[in-house]
Image 1 (cartoon, rainbow, N blue to C red):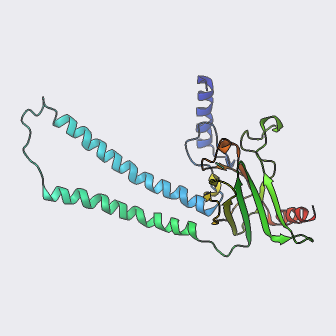
Image 2 (cartoon, rainbow, N blue to C red; image 1 turned 90 degrees about the vertical axis):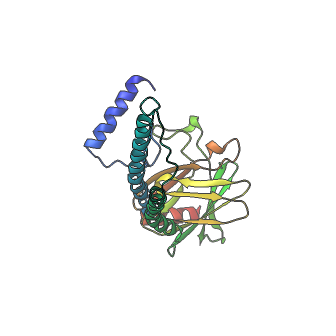
Image 3 (cartoon, helix red, strand yellow; image 1 turned 45 degrees about the vertical axis):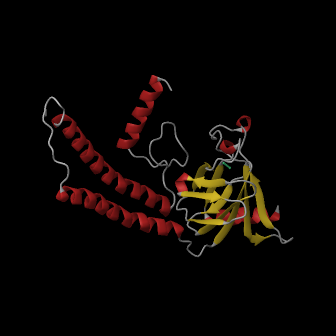
Length: 265
Ligand code: CUA
C-alpha cells in the first residue's frame, strides 16, 4: 500500500460519506474498519448494538483518561511534595462501584434481547444442512427429493487463483454457491465431518461452529438479493484459509427454478 493508494482510498471514503450511493459491500474491503453492510435483521441488530455500546465506551474512556491525566498532573511529586494520607472514603467507593454496575445493567438490556433474538428459529420454510470438511463445505437441501428419492447435495470448493474471472474475489469465490431465497425464514444446520470448522458470513450476522457429531442450528432471513462472502472461522488445519463460503440470495421464483434444475440433474 503506497502513499498514493492511501490518498485515493481516503478521497473515495470521504466521497462516499458525503454522497451516499447504494452499493452494498458484502465482502471485506481493503483497509476496512467497519462492518460489512447488513443483509439480515440480525446483522442490523448487531451493528446497532455496536453503535449503542460505542456511546458508553466513548463516555467511559474520556472520563477515565481525564481522571488519569488530572491525577498525573496534580499529584506529581514536584507539584505535590507532601502526599495526602487519605486511604479510603466510603462515599466515593460506593459511587465508583455502583456507577459501572449500573452502566453494565443498562448495556445488558439491548444485549440480552439481541442474544435471544439470534437464538430464535422462527418456523423455517427451508432447512439447509452445511457440513464442514477438511477443507471445503458441503450443502444438503433435504426438503426436496428427486425421482430416486435423493436429496440435493453438493460440495463447495474454493476457486483456485488461476480459475478466477475478472471481478471475482481471490480466496473467497467458490465453485458451487449455497443458493437461498430472499425474504424467507431459513434454518441452517451446521456440522462437521472431521474436525472443528465454523460457518461464518459477516453480512448475514452468522457465525456458527461446525462440530463433528453434533448439529448446531442458526437462522437466516435475507432481506435483499446478493452475494454474501464468508470464511471458515475455526482453525481447522493447513487449508483453513482456503475454504470460503458464498451465499447467493435470489428471489423466490429464481430459487424454485434453481431447485428444480438441481433435482433434474
Ligand atoms: Cu474449516 Cu477452518
